[in-house]
Length: 118
Image (cartoon, rainbow, N blue to C red; front, side):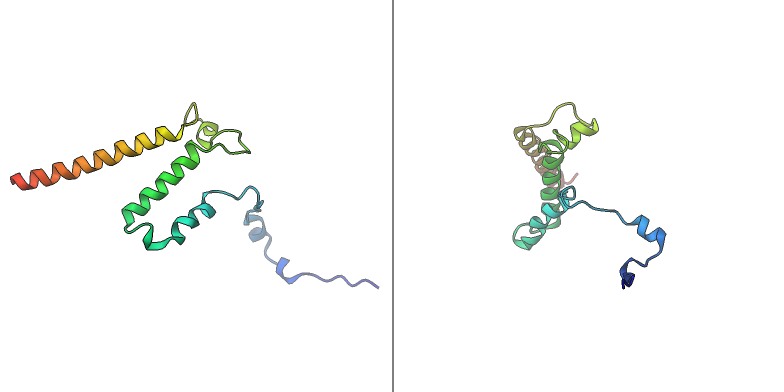
């Protein structure tokens, strides 16, 4: 004789069951698990919030504009139509260097203007 048992964990409201995303483990390898490496390093890696923001921005830029994804056969930026061609790492380094130079120049100009009493 077979007894039908219902699993209590499945006895939820139908709207809640429909709202839950069904994640495929192979497709959920998004930036979030990879960013754990940055947060796991703790304060030794990012001493302040600005450095942490820069590290995350650099990672996401490389992830979306440089790294070719196997499922898309291109970068997400090219697939979304944001860029025509995938960037190379040299372009990212040049852009980062230019940004940091502008940031340092702005700090210098501000300190110089303060020293002159403007």
